[in-house]
Structures are given as C-alpha cells and as structure tokens.
Image: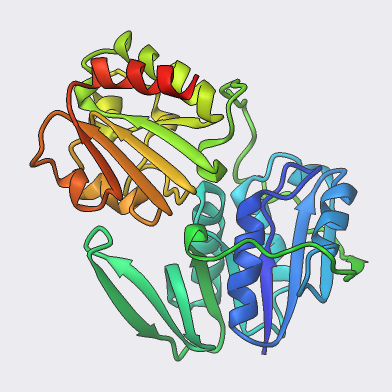
Length: 309
C-alpha cells in the first residue's frame, strides 16, 4: 500500500490542511508521497519534505500550475497515480475541485470528508449534518479520499523526505485564470484559527457586528458568522461557519447571538471549548456549549471585553 497526498499550497508554503491530510494518510498504512504541483514551488516542496511520515515529494514545476487550476492539477495527479492504493486531499474548496475529477477518470467512487480510518479500506464519515456517522468500506483498487481536516491533527515537522522532479503535464486548455479577490485582514485565517468569535442573526445588523471586534482583538481571534447572519448581509460570505461554510475546530469557539441551527453546529461542534452568549435560554447552542451565558449580548460582550482588559 502507498498513499499519494495532493498538496495544497501557495507556491511558497503548505496550507495547514495538507498537514492534517498527511496524518490521515499515515493511518491508511504504507508509505506516503506528496505531490506538489505549482510554479516556482521549490519552497513548498521543501516544506513538504520536512514533514514527519513523508517518504517522497514529487514536484511538478510549470507555469500552468501557478494558479492551481483544478483541471491541470487533476491531470498531474493522474499522471503520477500509478502504484498508489490511496489518493488523498483535504476537503477544502481546492480538494473538492480536484478529487472528483481524479475519481471520475479512475472510474472509482470517491469517499468524501472522512473523519476516521478504521482500516486501509474502511473509513468513517458524517452525514445528516453531523448527527450520524457512517462506516464505509471501499472495494475499489484505488481509494480516492477527501479528508475533513478538523478530525485529524496536523503532521509534525522533522522529516527528511527525498524530493524528486516529475514531468509536468501540458496545460489542459479547459480553463483559464481570470483573477482573484483576496480579503485582507490582520486577523488569523478562519479555517485554521485557534480562537474564533462568531456572530449570528441576533447581532441585528452589520453595524452591530462591529461590537465583536474588541473581543476578537483581545483574544487574538478570527471572526466568523452563522449562515443566517451572512444571508442577512451582516457579515461577508467567507466568514460563514457551518455545513455549507467552513468547518472549524478551534481551541475556543465563542458563539454570540447564534441560536445553534443544526447546519451551524455541524461546522463547529468539534471545537475544544465552546462558549455561548444568547438571550434565549432554550437556544440549541447551549446543548453543545461548555459554558453558557443567558443575557443581552449588547450588554454582555462589552462587559466581557472590560473583564479581559
């Protein structure tokens, strides 16, 4: 058995999600090879080589990989896929774009968003918005797997894998990169933050969301939001936490004015410590919270900030 992990990176450094995926690959047994396809990506390849458990890093360095277009990355993965029993990527927007193409071309069933590895051919994954866990077994010769990164600890550094260059596939010509709008923020990235402060519909307006800023500043936290808050225009789309947003599992999750709809809980209930502030003592969020405060958030949040100060 041998696993191929498709790295997610920015041509300079690896995304943390790749480290979680390497941990999942280690549970599958056998050697681990990481594919780094990019442009001017030597630094990312060296970063992959320094991860414990990685045996080899394959580097495909060419201009057509600069913007990580899924069509090209999938073709490169297929070009080196021979001999691997498992092909894994993080269940991020990038991985969800690449892996289905790989699975379709290999004519195998993709196993999506695993949260555990029972054996090399058997995995666990959630469904019904995280309220049930299925154990699935694959009889395909090649297992194509996306990994829910919050379920696995990131792999540690300290490895010394061999780095090998491989021939780059040609540009597929099926898509082209037009542009990217990146939200600029001094706060930690939501998906990988150790502390997250989230607001919900109870915030009432986009202006009211600003009262969360001092709390997030004190805690060094990323800001998040429920889907209801995003749909109401209180917060931007990239703040959304939940089944249809980002899955997070920080050390501390502070839910403010969030009732706790099942879709939201699916995206944050694996957080180590959950604190909820809501005026409705019957709100479902209190069912998963380690600490709950029933009260008016517009009074409670400033008081908490004052205490932290």
